[in-house]
Image (cartoon, rainbow, N blue to C red; front, side, top):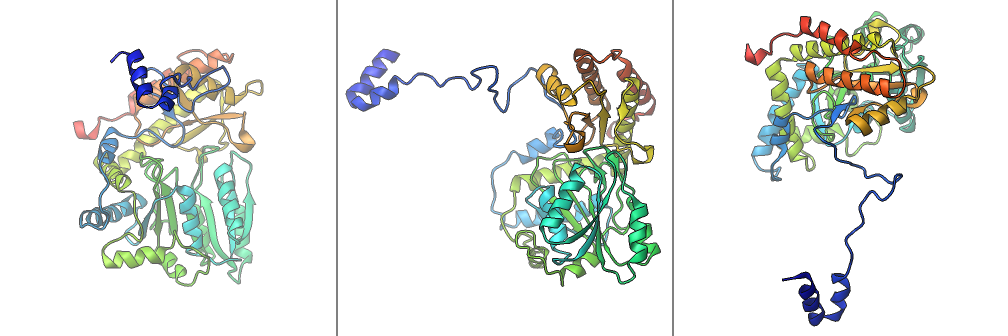
Length: 437
C-alpha cells in the first residue's frame, strides 16, 4: 500500500492515529560536532589494546551464543563441577577452593576481604597505582584498619617497609597483607614470592591476599608454592571472556579464617557456596549460564595451548612492546626492569604532549583502542595492553598504529622503527603454533 493511502487508512480507523502516521523519522544520534554516540562504527575490526577488557576468541563467542537453561537441571551442576576443577589449574593450586561469582574484580576484592577478616582488623596494603589505591579505599570503607605502604607510581611494592612492620609485630596484630600482583595503571608487576619469604622468615601468620586480575593466566602465578591464601581474577582479562565473572580461590587457611570472620557478607559469602557444593547443585543463586559456557571454552583454549606456553607468549609480547617503546625514544613508566609487566606497558610521553590526545586520536582515526593514563599519571602516559587472546601479528599492527598516531600529533618518531625492533625480536623468538606442529 502506498504511504499516502496507508495514512488515509489509519485516519479512517481512528483520527488520533493520524498524528502517529505523520511523525517524522527520529533524528540521527549524532546531531552536531559535540554530541557523540557511545558506539560509532568503523571499517574493519576495532584494534583493542587496552589492558582489559580484551579480545574475545570466536570459540568463546560461539559457546556463549545459546539460550538460557534451568540451572537446577543436571547439566549445569555437571558443567560447574568441571569448571571448578579446572579453574584450580590457572591458580596452580591443588588445595585451594574456587568460587565463581557473577561480578567484577571489585566484587572479588570484597569477597576476599569480608570472608577472611573482621571489622577493625589490621591490614598492610601497598599503594602503587590506581587499582591498588581503589582496593585500599574499599578496605577502609569496609571498616578495616589499613597500614598503607606508599610507593611512587612506577615503582614496585616497598618490601623493606613490610619487613620492618613484620619485625615489630611480635603480637601478630597484622591479620592480612594485601597486594596487587600486576598494577595495570603503571605496568608494574610485584614479586609475590618475596612477600611470602618475608612472612615465613618472621613466622608471621598474616593471610596473603592477592589481586591477580591482570596477571592470572598471563604471568607466572603459583598459589600453593607462594603460599597465597586468597587469589582473585576477573573474566575480562587474560581469560578473554566478557566482564561478569569474579573468580576467587581460597586456601585451607583462608577457609578456616572464614569460620570466625565477623565482616558482614551476603552475596559474596563463601559459606553459602560451600553448602551448595556439598549438595552437588553448586549455586546459591542464579548463575550466568552463558558466561559458564564461555568459561568452559576459554579454559579449553588455554589448556590446548598449554598454560606455560601462554605465559611465554605474554613474555614475548611484553618484551616486543618494550623494544618498540625504546626504539621510539620513549620511556617505560615502570622504573625497574624487575617490575616490568608482560600484560601492559605504560608509555611516558614528553611534557609537551597530552597522552589523552594520543588515545583519542588513535580511536578516532585508526580504530585503535589504547589505555588512558589514570589519576596521578593522567595525561602523562598511555597504556598498551598486550594480554589475553592475542598473537604477534596483532601486536605488530597495534605498534604500527601507535607510530602513526605519534607522528600525527607531532612527536618525531621514525615510522617503522618500533615495528622493526619488535618484529626482529619476534621473528627470532616466536615458536611454531603447538597444535600445528
